[in-house]
Image (cartoon, rainbow, N blue to C red; front, side, top):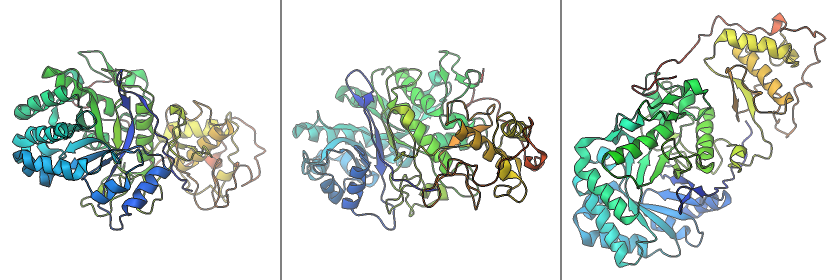
Length: 498
């Protein structure tokens, strides 16, 4: 697929009556050929990225961010947490060296003290709140406490029984930490930092969470998950987890602390055990997440109160250990080339250089082959699609199967209908993608060739003379090699579809 330069126009929308919601990005550095701070900032500026989170307080990066206006969250790494949590003086020195020395030129707006400490460094749990308080006291002494919030990112796994959200609660073994932490956040006007990864919820659910539910794809009302206690309908995992955090806080009698999602995303590549870590899903998740935030949708518990979110992450990190997916969460490669192009026109903005509006309609993987065949027959018949490229010996005949052939026909119909809403559905077996499905000499309608030439789908082969309804037998794919993957049942433990 031709790759177009990502253009980040991060618009502002309301998160509460007097605060703004935003989309930001995390900047990891586990990269063998890490761009220089100047190059990183040049990319941020070129893409109009206005909010970033750093995993440390690197001096060179903070200097490069000076006078850009970019709002920066800096972090206290976990390996420095014990020293800061045990010594007010150490915390004051950290603030003087890493914060005071850079403001106001560098627009530091938050400090993330540690990362998922209760999971990653549980022995530091008892001093976590002390670390936040010591950092905050140093900010007060420097008259920066009104400008810079202090919090700590948590893994969503500290929330137990997350569905239904109304029954969620924090792991009670951490009550001695969470209660004083929430008191601190409330008293300082800060927010709960939460890392939300529907990807992991999905792959760990053993099929109980449908992929569409994890990716923010539209669900019919009868497929939405319903909280039986509140009758609130949930159409995506992200909202359910965020609301679980709100309910968990209310269980401890804290009802006015906002949630900021410090990490969320989807990997674009995985190993053989991660078939859903692919470019299309990463594109779909992040595009829909951004629309969700910028459209001021909020959550079922707090509608129209958007949840500011940092996408994980700016760059692919090739030095990270673990599975392939661990290395492929980035929006860009280290050379600044975007991994994929996002399309956000429905959100009133564009999160990519979408001057081509290059989207395609494809068959859903795992869809019922019989339904695909019926839709293929309709597209090539009553739908008046020119399916001649699918004839044996023509450019799009191979691979000769119902998924490939129906993808071509679905897309041809979608393009000839000018991508009108509802023209890429085919009774639920099709979906929109930004990945060009063209392959070899088979160019799909709507595709741009290497020279920028638009293929309209009719120049590849002469039109058929056959105008009968129904699809000529030559277009039928082999359906016997495909199995139906139908996900029916519950979303999370205890959730039911209506």
